Length: 116
Length: 112
Image (cartoon, rainbow over all chains, first blue to last red; front, side):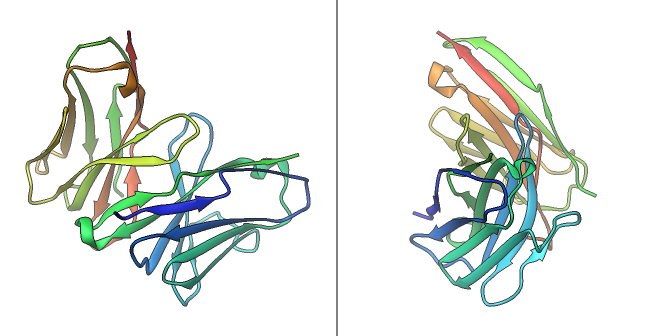
């Protein structure tokens, strides 16, 4: 149980275009989801906390207009990278906290974004 | 500010060896601690979750301990296998916060 499904797993886009990444909680409701970014050989960096029905909370230094987060339902959160540039190329992962398993976290499988 | 440190950064062992990965954290006021594994290019897989009131958790060949007062956790892997090769991440949830604070991970290589 407690599965988070993330799509797409890989995406290549042209510079200047926008890309949407979806995370769905399959067997539980996630009022809060977390979005991370991971650079090669580094640990995860929290970008923002997504709250169902309200605005996301962004970490310091993360551009909210570039990384649009929408959490319209209890099972779906999306991250849209707008006007993508090569420096946005990275590995993006979402996660949710699951009350049923002692408030541990479950993660999506990640999205490798390459901007060319 | 909570800081999580993992030692060693990398570890290479022969198949069959028992090994210990270390994690330390600076603020003992944690809600729980979780160990994850990450394979290259993949998301994180939860291995073990230890609540702040617990001392250890076990799953198969894995055993994680927690000493909250000293700010330490260990992940013990018994009879290591090449399939255990991955990066292992330790993360804590601070009391009163939903945010995970990660260590930088230990990259484990188990050689056949």
